[in-house]
Figure 1 (cartoon, rainbow, N blue to C red):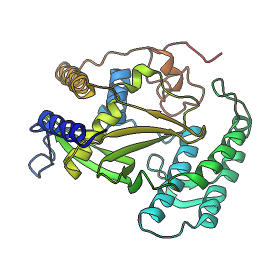
Figure 2: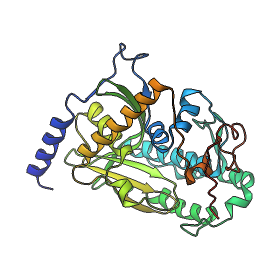
Figure 3: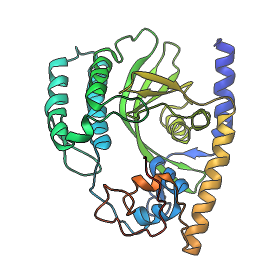
Length: 313
């Protein structure tokens, strides 16, 4: 991309987001609602589930192999990123020790210690050795892939250099909501352009319709704009158990993002005023903590009576 095109990109993006995104003031706290990308996705998938979790505060400590392994892999890549951005040699012996035996750090969701691969194998023995229905790999095989990713990720800094890992953010969008969260990784190139990277432990890449206007990367882009003064030029999903990349955001994403966010926030406001949170039964019910159809749900599995009967088989 030529310098002229880059300058045009920054100018158009800055003009578009100016006045729509700002920092959080003390006057905003306790007045404006707080919302994360994950919370927004829950609402869009099922308002009824959103109200149970964020309205009625029915937080479950139930976890899954996918969530626990995801926390472990994210932690290890965060630690490696910190070595690189600080200009220190990467202590691979320590990282492999954490991978095998876990860490004293706690999982943000369960507040429990992050388990290593040895303990996860024992805890989820049958699931660990069962091939998934998309990649065809077992978790044992996926960890071989992750070992490769761990040893190679971020090693080539000739084009992109990591500058942040697990970057916290909060900003006000259109004076109506505070978006907050963490960005897995932020890179910079030699021209000063930023790239946001999100690690995924999914078993396959996303459908193209999901990535052309990624709400997740859209929110991250506004966070970078508020924190660092410019919109990222690149957005990358990194599938760390597959060693695959998927670029996101196509031309015109900022206008589509604004429309989608406004529609979702308008619906959320309407639901809050009416007190009616309609359920949206779908195959996602099988993974919902409030649905009887989810074999791994326990604590709140009877709280939703509108669930889909879909199962993977």
